[in-house]
Image (cartoon, rainbow, N blue to C red):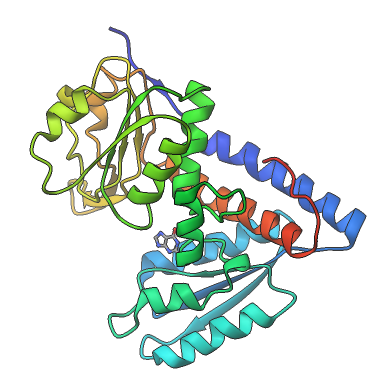
Length: 296
Ligand code: GUN
């Protein structure tokens, strides 16, 4: 058997960002509207700082305005909630994102539910989570799950009838990915730390989405020949001679010999997450101004 096709998330995300930039320019020309994205960072988590900077940069490259808020790690929950509610009332802001993880004294759920659902470009508000599960057309869909779905459709086209295994049941990735695949008429299994025969579940799946946060946990021998593998993991591992490097949740070197297609880490799902954030911000800006959002 030959090697799997590598799904180039970097290139697919670049195409998506270009189309979003064109649509943002059209919004400006026709409606004098510039979408605004507010990004809130609490504390100094180095990875979060990088993500937040990239989100702001990509927003501006796409012709949007970015409103950055950096709060100290010891900010009170009430002060953060007050900022988030204020952004909900700010007409220049169409999308609000509070970067995770948050310090332990702040309840993430309270923060998510303080975001105006119409501006909830992360899709974490209970209302949007409910809309996603019930199949409502106006759900704000979380960015990483949406990126996974776009990569799958890009490679496979029609997903109906395929058996999908989602490994991981987080609110940010596993659960919304499962809801999206179910809406695409896949037969969906969600595996987690208590799943008895993970290898067996994997071997039956036409689609595997791995989102567990454990480096190379999914072995090549678990993959059904020809399956499509989406690796959401971003794990920092020892790369030899002291430096660290990135590894996914899937043993890429082994899986690439068995799968039909697979996403690399880095360069797979990661770039899609930010592109989908821009897409959600554009859609939110349109809806808030009574404009039909473009199909992106
Ligand atoms: N931290 C890791 N992933 C995400 C995400 O998708 N959104 C936010 N806000 N924080 C994150």
